Length: 252
Length: 108
Image 1: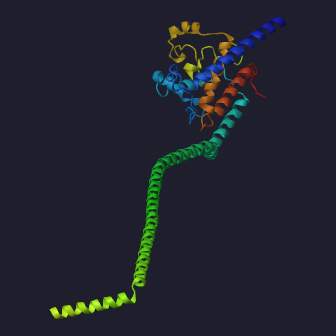
Image 2: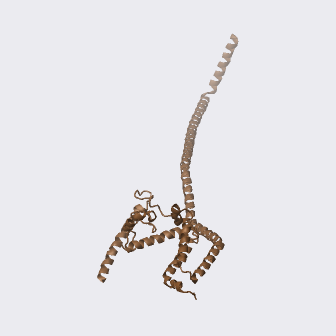
């Protein structure tokens, strides 16, 4: 007996291990439900929690039982069946009316009164609580959805801004190019000015030297010539001049 | 098949998430649409092992729950149903005692 049990339990364990692996595989394959072509959504739709319960008549009898008899017996059929059944059971004393029956009737009346009297208020209170609980439970999810939507919008905005950033970078690059160009031209200008200044200086210097040399030369020559002129020569030249003037005067 | 497993017919690839109220085997004519002369063959086709019976009761229990007890705005109907059902049940199991009242002229 025990050995049989052990054998069974071991096979059970093996099977369990097998099924758990197959179940995990199944779960893994079932998760992408949209891509699964085997999934039969028509005959086996996903079970959803209904909002309202199935309709009942007289507080507890399912509506479907009445619908079942409707095509055969019409509207009154089920009521006739029920009343007839009760009448039969009571009249043949199959259903024995004993003292519990009366207490049952009274309890049913009290229950009906209580349900009619307090039912709506209790239902309203519970619905309120339910709405509150639902809101609480869904708030995390809704907040997450809201936050994620905002995040998507923000990242889209920043992507757009990054696109603008490239324009801005281009503009900055152009600006810097212009600045570089301006600096380059300014430097060219300053080089030109400096070179011109130096050349002008050289020119001026050489001019000055030349002028100085010339003047010095002239002064020197004049000085030497003056020194070379003797008083006799001066007198002779003066006499010659007078004679020249006389000759001119005689001709005039 | 051992304890704690899904029914052998259940294939998550085809059926999706498991619903304990649903029968995943081969579909037959619903009982309410069976004709009287087909009733014998219909009954012969039923799986009458204790396991199948247990599964059927379990499915019925889940179906009842999903219909009356689990909806968001459930009413008082399931409690009345349970009360009426237990009244009938206890009446039946005590029926031998109640039957004795028939023969008595004076009830205490």
